[in-house]
Image (cartoon, rainbow, N blue to C red; front, top):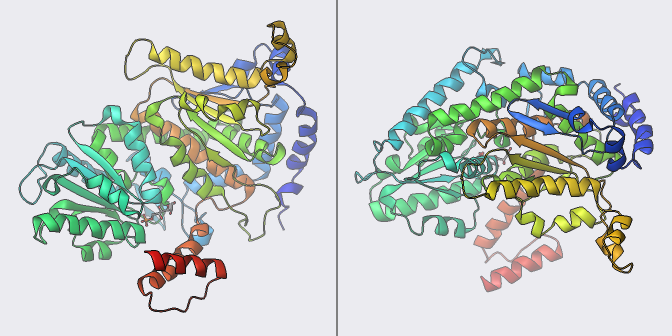
Length: 540
Ligand code: G6Q
């Protein structure tokens, strides 16, 4: 039987090594190695990543990489890229990397080369987008479509929203984009309030086409269209679908020719560059979309081929393990210095926490170590005037990822220099802090000094890219995807299922039936749930 993670020689060595390095201060690490900034920086696939402000030495990195080898990371990377069914609990291969593979590449799932299918769908999407963007796709009454509403949830929403926001600079400003995900009717009501049905197209994005929230919103959309257009034939002009479930799509009344396919070897949270990205492609056009997939592919290739000591996603993933399992860090913050990336932390929350927020290992044993940290964040500099206080002086260690761009997209006085100055200042302040001597030397009275001391030694990664382009976005997302995979491999969990969302779904169905048949008084939940339902029934 395979040794458990905590018995691997590298894990034990890291434990012993941690005792030696935990008291080292970044101030000393930098003083003792004037080249540290360069030594721990790496460049690849459009990104330059500075790992030097981490509480690591060369030896830490060497041991973490040994851990990756002892955990079989090279074999697992190979298994993913060669289409093995590594999503064992759902008996599926995991092939989002095929979504961005060039035509010449052969990637097999179930013995079939799937790359041609990917390109066929992409071509169909591109044709559709071009027609729509040229105003050739008309609504039922002959009006040009100007409003695009994506209906989807989870992986069928977070990627499209994030990408639309991120790439807004490149989008067609004559079109309106809205996103409906929540079953809260406010989502639908607010998204459609000022829109004319005749000019509105819904994209129903659902891999399964059975997700209750999405189906509820899609039916409401159907009614909203029919209330004005009063003709069933309008559905075919005002709805398209992205799904794997042709039957259900046809039942809804959507023309199968207007269904954009994807496959069960793509997980929802890994699907933003599949047909799920249809709204993205409509917004930015096919050429920019291809640039985005090229960005993903560049990072895929880097991940697949680069030696681990130069491999950005591998190092990032291993650092997460280092802080989670040895320093006991519970959370990590992602802090993009770009308004365009304001939905990026929310997107990464699903990617990281739905992938690695698990306790059972691949062989079914329960872990005796921590798995996914809680991920959170907001764009700088807003966060600085909010929660950064805790990161600087609070009692928890919160590793941070700073993301910034050397060139801006909106040339407006010297805003960008000021923005980036803040990014650099934050990582510097976190790492080096301000000692009590420095504080006193500034003339601070002794009683106030403790409040003004910054301990420093708070780790961060800084990711810099030239500009926020579709390609860079692809680089960035794939960086995190593969970092998440790396962590999952070390923790021996399946990063590609999500059984944790099932129980709530089943109970919601049962309770929803109980709410709609209030005459049935028999409630058989616990006394708290029973009481909440009764109270709601009474007042609804
Ligand atoms: C993501 C999950 C999940 C999924 C949604 C929507 O990895 O699988 O977030 O994307 O539950 O599912 P449908 O696309 O099937 O509606």
